[in-house]
Image (tube, rainbow over all chains, first blue to last red; front, side, top):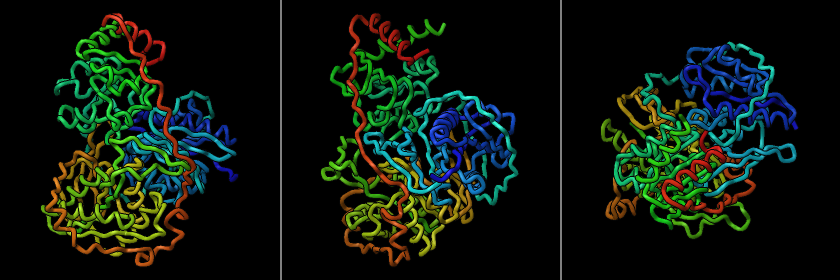
Length: 321
Length: 263
């Protein structure tokens, strides 16, 4: 097997790393240990002070490109820089989080350097010295095991699929002087709905369906807020215009895998189940004992969500206090 | 504005159970109904709206077998001006990179200012747009949810980023954009519309016309080897909690504490 390190491309916004970055680093460390190679982290658009903590997550070396052009993600500039780093470092494996940005950049990078890419990996194993990854297809109804042909192999890992492990490593910082190249994109502004938690990265998702009966989701919103979670919706709730499309969980919406998924008034159409069945613990509240959501749930409550959910909120509030 | 929209004919899997074939090499496709990838309708609708605003034409293109022609006609019935089918036996088994390479060859035969794709397709990777852009060395933006000012040099767009937030960018033309659902409401296509495009000639371009070697496409051009398809463990179904509402909720919270669902 040709030697070469694992290169983890990190993602930060306003000097804070995304959770999936820690997941990618931790998984990168596990791969590096099995392969007997090192782990190098790449930090773009942030300084040494921000980057140094990555040593705690297993990075032997941390390459820092603190160029202000890279502060906001620009597909072309970021790809230029990463492609340069790849040609210099010659990694065997590149690992990145399959966030919006990570998917965008990894597809562009793969075409640029003609490397194999697997997007949304949910499992990574080593088989006879080769990486074998599992990725969901058709919204998670099917899984496919894939091996790569060629190096470097690029893995974009699905948020919330890999565990974060602290692992003290040298974390030696190297400052890079990078050539950003030409950019055909100009950042104008971000319109942020602050405080809203990204569905695909949330630890807890509380979702409402047709059983909500209208656009007032406050009863489940309260529970989501209390748990520090995100609000989701079924396709029927979105079709009714009760919630924006961005909240839709399912095969034609977002695929989520939180620690806890609470489905309220969701019957569990197949396309919805595809979007949430990889959640670790699923609780379903539904009036209909025959609802198919119960087939994918760990715990079921047959009852009126407007009665049950406030009681859950109340009970959990006691714990939080 | 000359606009190219990449579309795909896919099995409708969203409302159906899917079965893996006997060898585990693909899903069982036989009983599935095919249609245009739902996401692509948003891209075609957006292209038509841009054309109606600034002039020009909309061409839809797909990579597939002769049956893929039906989705080209459907999108032409929506209002696209032209359709192109990229079809050749050697294209079979192409992965995302292969498909991007085939479309790139077609793009270079024409003169386009803007290429739109759907945000993703049935297999969920959503990678062809980004790869195509990189191959053409054009700028690219994914998950475009609003499209504001447009002139012959640049477009102002909004991308959906994490948390349902919006990032506003200016992107130079020519460029590739992947269009997110919700940007518009794709128009309805009636039987009459489809009938009108039924006899339109759809040009078919193969590997030779596109100047593609058979090694660069299809299975031989793929650098992912698919080993195995399988269906995830269905799980055992829910434990239904019984008792009074208060008892149930108390029980649930205890269980979640143990399972680590809540802290």
